[in-house]
Length: 333
Image 1 (cartoon, rainbow, N blue to C red):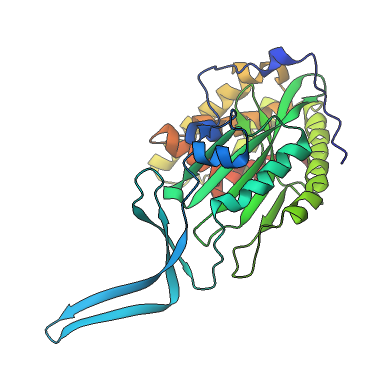
Image 2 (image 1 turned 60 degrees about the horizontal axis):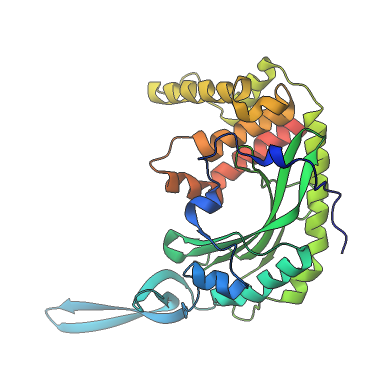
């Protein structure tokens, strides 16, 4: 299987984060599993193994003056699992009766195959969010993408599973900029960045099917590198960056004072990232720097109650993903 042309030597110094205390969303919410000898060991280390996810009837009891009546929902079931730490049965979610359960272990063969096929040393982080309704395992690919001899990116394969009826089992490729810990998951026209398997009653996690599509994922990374190189070679003015902010975060002049004040604070922070942040120093004044400023704001600077709340938003927020995509589309148009 051919891999994209990614340089691997001589750039170690560029991998040091500008802020050594900054963590990726995966590191913030997950458990380090790089020392695990297999995907199953990684799942055990992260507390994701042995859940025995199962369907239970949804039944309610009503007490009235006439007696006790039990009612069962004929259309939906409850997903429950066994907490491996306490062995207690816990609620996961409510799904349709036709929902197909994929145990966390079902993805282990996929993960081991991805590690073997990519040449990666093993897994990176594994974790659960939203009370276990979504889980993830990351695999850092061994090579580096060095954009135009100036900026360094890592490539990660990320395996997502879900137990909520909302999303499929997914394997996706995510470019990652270590210098600022930004995730760059972006859709590129005519290129596949994600392989999905829906949770239906007859669906199976087919290792051979996913393996056959790995080449398409690597094609995506080559396309992303080409677009990044084009952006890094394109200069951008401060006025154009201001226009970008207004396009990504449109705010009416007639908006209430709180909205206008929030917009002003956001613009100040974005402008600071664009003009003076150390994370943009090697690429300052380019369209690539503008994209990184927007991404860094969304991943690390946007207001959030806690670091965990912000990290979860990075991984699953549709609105955040759409803002990154809008910025990317405008900057590559």
